[in-house]
Length: 170
Image (tube, rainbow, N blue to C red; front, side, top):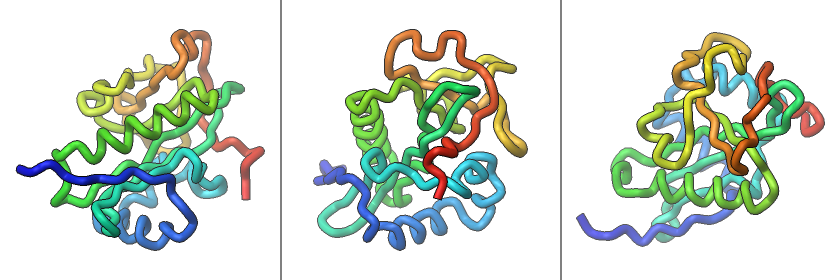
């Protein structure tokens, strides 16, 4: 396959409808019952840490990050990360991940959590959160609850309920 000419850009408010349609196509209506979506109900994602992938003017992927807390510790929740099916397995998701984590670290964030497949996300530093260290609202498969330390040792001593950062509530 040929190399894709992908541009990663910070999400803007004008991207919202196209991203929502992408989420509809890739995740379907069942996405709203997932625990991670429960955290997104009252707090908006951070536009400066959320990105789109484009080929020309075509939006082919998106990643978002939400301000959360784990107990009393500030963190980010990464997701959803999605790429249009014809462009998967071509490095687009990895480009979005790399940019979102790089910018989060540059802006002083220390921890990022997500619910996802460890084999995929471990390539960028995510590890399973030890059982009992963190809880989420609603049902969650805790073997898929992952954390990445953007600063070495940032997860030491951190535990508690994962919840939205209410200081950023709409």
